[in-house]
Image 1 (spheres, chains in turn blue, brown):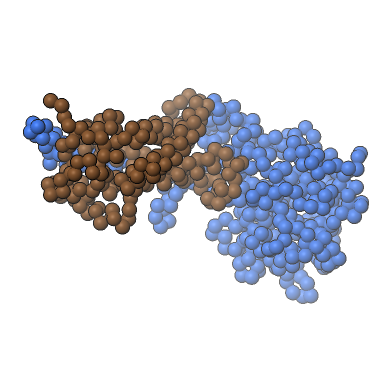
Image 2 (spheres, rainbow over the protein chains, first blue to last red; image 1 turned 90 degrees about the vertical axis):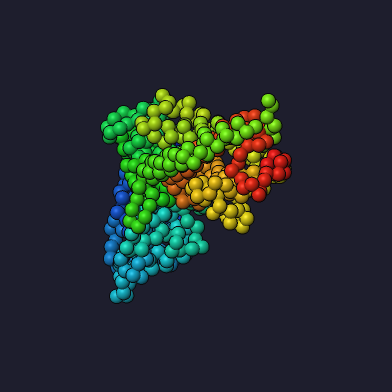
Length: 352
Length: 215
């Protein structure tokens, strides 16, 4: 295996990687070499999350996750996977690593940051007999990190925990820690390739990848689902599924593919076995900053028309249209009765 | 007997009026189909309406830019741009006239304040449609703008709501025009209106021929 992989080739590889080849499997030897040569360590912490992003990472099947974690990514701490726990995990795994590698380690954050009640909604451990809130942990580690990698929509944009009414005051990491480079790898969950690929880029080139305007690596998030969708021909031919399980484009069932930035349509999930649309589920646009602030199985959200009242745009338009037609009818009747239409003009014509 | 005619709409006004009308009509029809292919069965597939929608979007862009340029260069803007300071006080008399509470109304110029408000509003509605439309058309190119406008779903809702506003206001526009008299409708084709056409103006504000009604 060659030990040099130019950044250009790397990005091409990540962006173009089809379902047929396993990106993680291909990258693993390069990353192993980088780690052996002293690549920066990675600390993985979890806040208001469902651990789904970690589960998704475990889906890296070739090579298996053990090799990725032990040989290719130098993960010093992971709340679910580390053997060390309690004081050992916190002091040795997190704080010692951060202290020894100040400004030279990468912090992976999974889950939003609850800021309500001074962050007391999310306790992650104890230090010197005091509880540590996730808010404090993110602030402390984030300011020491070389860069923060937000894995999952929750840490990147707030996601599910930050959806109104949001009683715990969840916020994305970018709102809590400033002045540190942030890479967002959104998704609910993110594809393992996106996570491994982002970490690989950092380990190999000691730099964050090129980002789009929402902080997402361009190599994974520059495609639109709708453009490469395997059900696109159904859309062009106007064959739309009316019920789940029907063949056809899923637009009428609320598919958000036309504005979802994500390469699932070409990458596929579970080692290329399947992905959302192929299995008949409309795209939720889970990689978008506004996710999930929209009705999942509706084409369009309803709009507020009054206190605690909503209506579809069609309903409002229909009511206003009916009102306009009534108004026109009334005015027309008035015009005829007063002689503005018919009577007066004819008199005028006669005068000439 | 030859009626005395005076020019009401210059050739450019008529050209822009009808190209914009065709573009907006097609945009609305194809737009409703793209929004709801099951509910608005006007086409048989997505290709034709989408192509038409995108083509007419560019026609509307040219039409809007051209109309604004003409309004500035030909000093037509004063006829159609709504001025809050000058036109708002004229509203009561206009509403009285439309509500049949008065038989006549003062002389307003080429258009009454309601018309001015509608035409100026259409410019802003058209600009909103162009901006949101391009964000939806090229989401990769305008991703940041889409985010700034509140996300793509918000852009989609704005685009659709404004479409409804166009439909409703065009309804009122067409009715008021035809109800004013067939010569008014004809003048948008020929450009000319009979010089003695009854605009419902006060006797004491007798129309000064050729002053500001012709452009």
